Amino acid sequence: MSVLLWIVAASFVGGALSVLCAALFALNARAHWVNGLVSYAIGALLGAVFLDILPEAMALSGNFAAVSGTILVGIMVFFTLEKLLIWRHCHHHHCEAHEPHDHHADHAHGRTGGMIMVGDTFHNFVDGIIIAAAFLTDIHLGVVTALAIIAHEIPQEVGDFMILLHSGYSKTQALMLNLISSMATLVGGVLAYYALQSMQNAVPTLLALAAASMIYVAVADLIPGLHKRTSLRDTVEQVVLIALGVSSIFLVNLAVGA
Image (cartoon, rainbow, N blue to C red; front, top):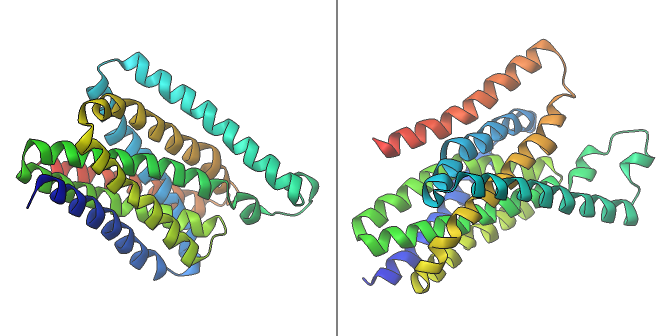
């Protein structure tokens, strides 16, 4: 089997398999699990950023100032994009600023969900580039890398799926968005195969932008929602689940590195 075919197969199967595994878990979740899984998703997003994506971006770039500067610009860009989405929502519908009661789910629709898809698509695209680079180095390394990426993606995709449901998307919409986003892995892998040098140069920037999006979603969109539940029991549950999300990413990286 040719290297290109290995890359295509690993990127397609890896992306689709991680989404379908995540969907099977998420679709069997009960409604009252959603808030808990959003807490878990916050931990998984922050864990992926600070334990995996940023260290990799720093190592590939070697220029810490450039990576951190890209993250800063990315956060500003995502803030601006979100403001535009809110403005569009308020322009065509009743804005939550004009309503005395809570429209959190409606307001979040197209905001948190859209933002998480931007970050996830960047991440999947870069995963494709990494898979291609590994296969071009060695077939065995490529297979191991693809398996590691699938293992790494599943907990994150579960979080993404639950965030989309939490943001007001239907189960079918959430599944389709995640599947479409996962195809960025295939696009990244094929493009990297034909233009590996230029793609490798872009990897740190893409990783930094993906990190910026995930940080922004976790801190600006998801964490404020947790503050609406103020009891001690809810707070302890949130902290434990966020820590569990971070720990799951740490354990995956530990297992892959072992």
